[in-house]
Length: 378
View 1: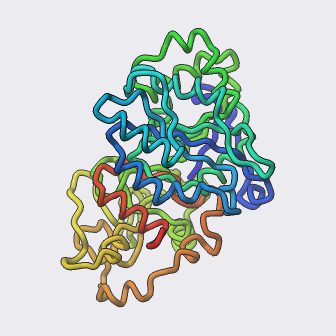
View 2: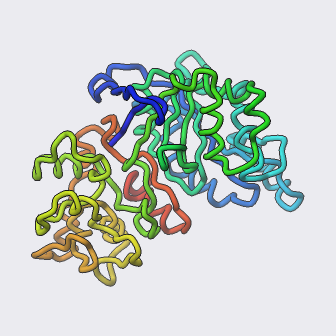
């Protein structure tokens, strides 16, 4: 679920508008900067052909004002010519006049550039974005879901992402409202604090803000997670709105149930509901992922990574294995459609579906994620 609060060290939590209200609001402008390096051409091509295609306008709900750009420092001599050709061919690279780096000023340089130069499409041409986001290139972004969440937050003093240790938003994907981007660009104390773990630095910049108590911290919690095969504590299966709805209806999940419980699959064999909700139907922390059965087709293997799916429950390694397993062909024939998984509205239900899948360290993992959420031919 999504949790919204003012500064994490201060009281007075706030509630965001509900999903129906979000659909009545106009889309917001989102500039997404995907951090990349000179040699990562193949990863950029994969992103261009998958989720970034959904941010090219065309009247899609909420995506007509989203722009995706790759952010690089100065390329090395070895890769300079290729990057120049790529910039000419795709015109989607922001080349910062700094040495390429991860934690030595690149993030600040990007926000400083964005404060002056970031633009997004609008019905009348171009406009300044309401939000600027930084993302890693091993993240898969559901642009429609992200825009919908940002849409309801007001666009002023917003710091959005996955809150870690009640302190900072994880570097896989976070966003700042444009006013905070301008603050980061112009603040002298911030400019003197640009070296170190970049995601932690952003939180320190927010704590230096002259009105820090007014900054809205928005944490997506279980909607931003690691790939189910990652083996990290943040990993779980691909999460669709229908899964959460089913869990709430079948097991009468009370409104005050801890939000961390939403991403796991409920095991009816357990007598402890709270602990049962901490398990995934796809993976278990500390154990190497194994597919449910040998010789599955690519589509069946992807379906097995969907949280709560019948295919995932075929695995004896699942924390909630099926008591009466069906053949894979039968499972695939009766699986929900994408529209059903999004409860009839593709990517439009605020606060209901996956926003970011992170830790896509393998090419296979990235393609699995694309197939799960976008289907084939995208």
